[in-house]
Image (tube, rainbow, N blue to C red):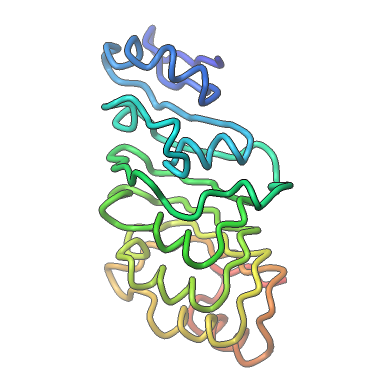
Length: 207
């Protein structure tokens, strides 16, 4: 466990998913409630999110977590990946979700990414998840974009259609909070690049 203090109080805790299962009830009693960052290997974060019916979260644990991050990139054996999200959780405090390299695919990403599950999500890393243009459409319809400040979609086979959808359908005016968009290492060509640059300008990283 890595613990940070501010003015004598615990301000942030970074810990492994298995450790949190043992200490979450003690964390719950801390006041003020610290920022709780859970970091683990892809398989462990995937399970923590509810993709394993054999390891449900204790009731109330999800209410503590502020951020979930993978610490390694890539899953070796996709055959071990459960077919669907078995027990969707609500994560009321979670503002950062890094699921890079989990190879979700379009359907599993759509099952996970819902505004009801992540009402405060501002930072989302979906790199390396085998996402196509269909995943972009699902994300835009999820309600999450109006809250996102940082979105990483790089390392996915997203093409021009997905890029144009992002440019056309991303929230506008006061609902556009985006500060950084990463679409490096995709299949986006000149038409999609032009649409994205016209819409997002210096906020986007394409190369």
